[in-house]
Image (cartoon, rainbow, N blue to C red; front, side):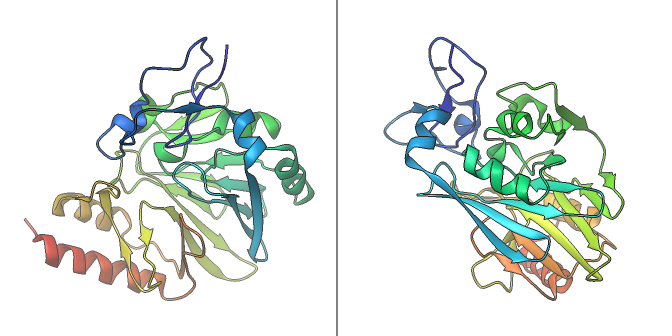
Length: 270
């Protein structure tokens, strides 16, 4: 029995004798099955040919990215807080070196993931860090390909995870799409960790919102208005996105608001 992993998106599946016929995450119209067909690998194979890079953004915030790139290529972010340490989003490669590095920084006390494309090997990550709870929005429960008793499905528009740390469900990319809001009292700064739910663009001056990025399917004006309304009144200076160095370090709230207005102007409000 093997926990096969989709080579295209990097999500690990329940243990089976033979690989699944198709990856439901890639066959969904937000993603895609590669033109040369569905392919499978294993964590052990990924460990042979890839490594993780840990980079310090600033005190209390580190990024993890796999090189050479694998799957979708997103990064994970390790966030140190007064209540404990959070792994925000997840990457497929976990190995002994990565676990040792994060344990040196205090270990992982909780895992929270923005949406199903980044579920990756979340069960492996949880097991490596004393069965850390994995927070997923219940609206996306059908996309969990490998079950774990450590998954905590939450409901509603927001969840107070710890003091000064909140999960918010703005929707959009997925019904359960989630962002993480944090206030750091030591720095007196509010940050938003968004994956590609609120996608930081290469100019670092705008953000975008899509139903499907690879298939270029936009969200409706109604969806954008829901995102706007659920984020109403939430302060944040910085936005940390899904990709390498996609960090907006100041004026994040104004950038979010102007990007919402730009989107609605382009697609037309109802």
